[in-house]
Length: 348
Image (cartoon, rainbow, N blue to C red; front, side, top):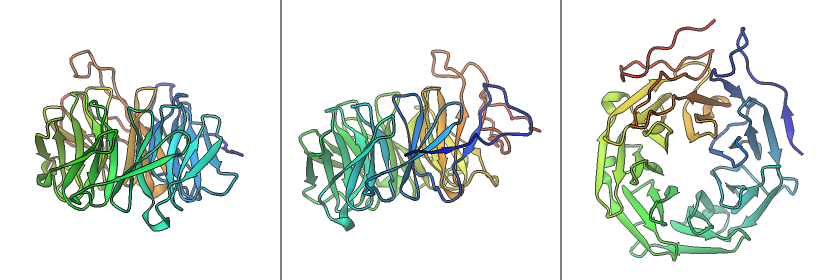
């Protein structure tokens, strides 16, 4: 049964409908990964073996597995079957429908070597990484196949994302390589060590290339289908241990940083970051574009889910109106001048 959380966090003055807001998920919930569901809501994994749903209006509902098989859900993605799929401790992958019905399937790798992250493949299956340095595939009915790299260039694969070429691309956390797996399990890896050894997030960009973050090198990278790699140093722009990355609705990519900043990179490599360093937002971790066009993210360190509202692009890839930001009591005020982001006035 879902747990209904009564109402959302509000300011002293009721915000207008278009204002951005943040929503506390409850002490100890530890929201981790987030995705946009086919129902127009955002869904996230949380502590205490729960999954959460937040509507665009801010209503929060938490769900638990009645069978008790889901333990600390982590990575979450929307599958091609209209449900959300997620990894779980205990060597399982779970599935939750938009009505909150939860089922899960064993992966068969052992508790210590189970699934880490997942994505929806172009073949209709769920693809995942494992702690045993494998890439796996699960059908909608729970049938599993795993593929190991030979020679072993896959070392602790972390995030993965479906590419426009029909394959699945993944980062390796420990060896500075990014990998590509075809739907029949053929694995190729590419050296991107210029971005640092600790690769993290990966996503397809609006330019058709795969973009990734280099956590240890403070760099954002781009890799083409032929393996050509370009990296961009974000240190001067305030990038610090970048994590998750996603294509935004404005023709750029947005990413999280461990230093309480959210970053933006254009397809030509221009990087800007925005400060979220207040008591209400700590260590934004996962990020997704909501059905409402807002960038939703999790704040793992203090049990919050928030969003940034962006303007509609004018068709050239450049925004044609000022952005509205995550609401009070904190402000997402750029310290750099990116041109189209004006400072946000202090609220009540």
